[in-house]
Image 1 (cartoon, rainbow over the protein chains, first blue to last red):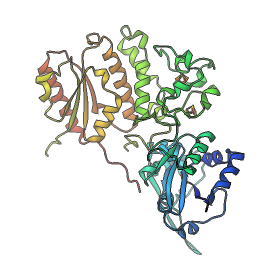
Image 2: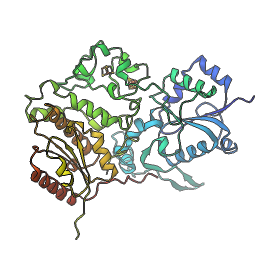
Image 3: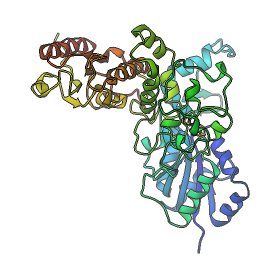
Image 4: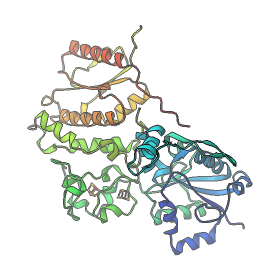
Length: 325
Length: 134
Ligand code: SF4
Ligand code: SF4
């Protein structure tokens, strides 16, 4: 029997998701044995025209990482969708926009201005900005258009499954690959990860007080963090209560609070709003009757960058999706 | 110039002035009754805005008079932090208003909705449309 064909593609991403595939280590060889990798720009020399030459639906599954920021990415994922039986949004950026999605606090103009004109390391006396078309001696040079708004993969094409994480951990990738090979997939649209919140699997969860009260919000560098104690109880914002588990608690084990890369827990639509509700409830909880309005306001204002903190990985996929400019 | 006719969503605690006779005290949109203003999750506000509201009003009991003792404190903090965040999204925080109104104050509720609608009318429609995607 012919081996199922598999493709990997990257869009607006950092390369970490490609690294995660390589991190399968010797398991990668097992996977590579069981499937036929037909397209993987970061590692293998296939071209777009090779994909175009395939039958529609010929690729059993495409793993696509990265958000959609450029016209070229949009075009490529439409092509991949047509040629693939299944599409898996691989990693936080494809799933929810990820870090590139934070570009939605800006638009093309403000990003170009900063990057090419205002950045202190930039020398650009003629104010040259990227153009989709430039005429030079030898003819026309083109660049893909840069969108004002970053999109998630499922805002651009139909997506069958999601592998969360920045990047997805090897065990979840392997589970997903095995489920696909064995035809044991859950219902379409599922996130291929546990459903509970990170707190439930957190190694320091027993130190989390019954009634969590925050009297002073502190950033990680402002406090010598006790690795045995829940971050929230130390006044450091941890996204654990509003984030899906399954990552292996990698940040917590490195004595850093969760930033939320796995996205919302099952059934929650907007991770940032859930995190905001959670943090606001805890602020001054132990003294709410006695705090003056000014003290309350001070506590609320002490939360650093609420939008960036609560939507660090999920802005593009959130209800509001972007800043209104 | 015709003034903009705003859509207003009101979330009101059952114990404050939103009881049965008050269902129609918002001529500008729905009144959603909850058991306590603290039941109004920030995501309800975002959903209301994205679903068509130009402004959202949350009505609860005076902090201290909350039927469940501490609900209004929580409402105050959540909505205050949400306002800060809305501003970061380029959305005027004035599109969200919290009012404390005791249970019998029906005229007060009507007046509060009217004054809010007036302010939202001047602001115009909520910017639901996204910047050019392509
Ligand atoms: S809030 Fe963070 S540190 Fe505390 S139990 Fe949850 S995941 Fe662990
Ligand atoms: S702890 Fe949070 S941010 Fe870190 S890997 Fe896990 S889900 Fe992602």
